[in-house]
Every structure is written in structure tokens, then in C-alpha cells.
Amino acid sequence: MLTPAATRLAVWGDPIAHSRSPQLHRAAYAVLGREWTYDRRRVDETGFAAALASLDDTWRGLSLTMPLKGVARAAAAGLDRRAELTGAVNTLLLHPAGPRGFNTDVGGIVRALADEGVTEAPVARIVGAGATATSALVALSEIGARRIDVVARRREAVEPLADLGRVLGIEVAPAGFEASVHPPSPVTIATLPGDAPVTDASADALAAGGGLLLDVVYGHWPTALSAAWERAGAPAVSGLGMLLHQALLQVRIFTTGDAGTALPDEAAVFAAMRRALDEDA
Image (cartoon, rainbow, N blue to C red; front, side):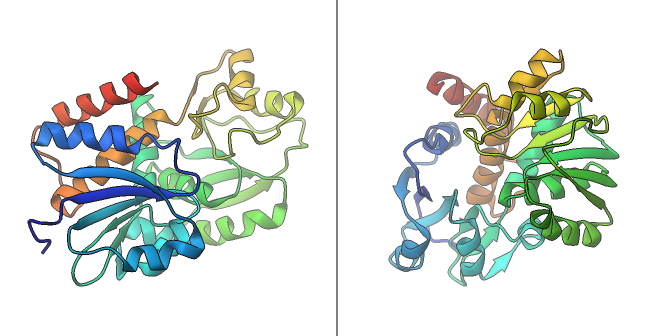
């Protein structure tokens, strides 16, 4: 059990100055009446272990962003199922028995899709094959996906996702950006960095199939893909909804120890977090 003195929280990553997590978390704890602090700190992979070891018992937990999700998983003494499946930890609860690792990105994606009316998708598409694509794959499995096309520049980059797909009972099919025609998809999750180069021709070919685009980027908007979806007259949303929902799940973890346990007056907490996000836009 955490001690009453465990009141400090932070988000770590590199870079970190852009993170909106402090505004979101501070808004939540104000509603909950918790006098907790939440800050940001630039920490890279090589400095992570020493930084984690330096924390005393006033620390409650950490949010982790890139590039720390792999080293955070390695440091965790226990993992939730989503972290086990993805191999990525974006939340550490600093339990005396050892840090407990969680992946709230998966739940953030599921909830962001639900906000747009997508609660099931037997087929879907992911653009990109990096770490966030793994969370997207697990999220799509939770809404019933059985086939997922993964559009990537290198076919071999899709192989780890195909392996995970076999574990989840999902057919993962690689596709290239150079294709002029793609199968239609009711939902596409783009996991590319905001400044990733995508030609108009490639973006338009992907958008031609219609369906919802959830682009996890929120700092570079519009992206090449969201612009193509707009040209095609199809809906596209940024990653702000995912950011908001994954942060709410982190607040649950830091408050209750469990991502599945709702907060007291959670609707008011969520509304305050949304306002903080809007005010920071």
C-alpha cells in the first residue's frame, strides 16, 4: 500500500516540453480534492534507471512517453494485460513491492473510437508499424477486429505485429505506401509521427476507401493523412481524444490502483480535464 506521503507524480520523456499531461492531471486532482503535485521532467533511455532509483517514498507514480515505454516495461515488477501484450508501459505505479506497469494507450484508443461511434470493426487498418501501432493493434482486437492491414514502408517492420496478431487471433496483412489502391476500411488508425513524409498520392489512395481516420498525432495538425481524408470528404480526428482518455485511465490508476475502477464523480473529473485541454489548445 502506498503511504499518505506519496503525493508526487510526473511525466517523463525526451522531448517533454510539449506534454499536456500536467494540465490534464492537475485538473483531475483538483476536482478529486487531492493535494498532489504533477510535473514534467526530461529523461532519456540511458538516464531512466538512475532517475527511477533516485525517487523516494513521496513519489506515487509516473507517466511515460517516448522513448521510455520499453525501459519502463523492463523496470516493472508486474504488468497489466495490455502492457504484457504490447511490451509497452506508459504508466508506473510506484508500489513498495516494485513498480507496477500499465498501458493506458490501448484503452485511450478504444474510448476515442467509441466517441466517434466506432465500437466494433471486424476489419481495420493501421498506418505505421512502430511502438504505437502495437497499442493500436491490441485496441482494435478489443473491438472485434479479425483482419488488419498494416501500411508500412518496410514489410519486415510488420512481422512483430503479425506475431502479435497470431496471439490475438487476428490476420495481419502488410501493405505498402506505394499501392495505388487499398481495400476500404471502416476505421484507420495512423501512428506515424506528425512530420512523417507522406506523398499526396499515397495519402489520397488510403483515404479513397473512406471510413474514420484516427490520427494519434495532435501537435502537428492537419497531417498529410488528415488532409487527404478531408479531400475525400471522410471523417478524421486527431489524437487529442486518445490523450484525454488515456490520461483519465492514468488518474484511475494513481488514485485507485486499477485502470478499471471508476473515480468518484468521474464525469466531473473528465469534464475538468477536457476543459484544461481546450484551454491549453
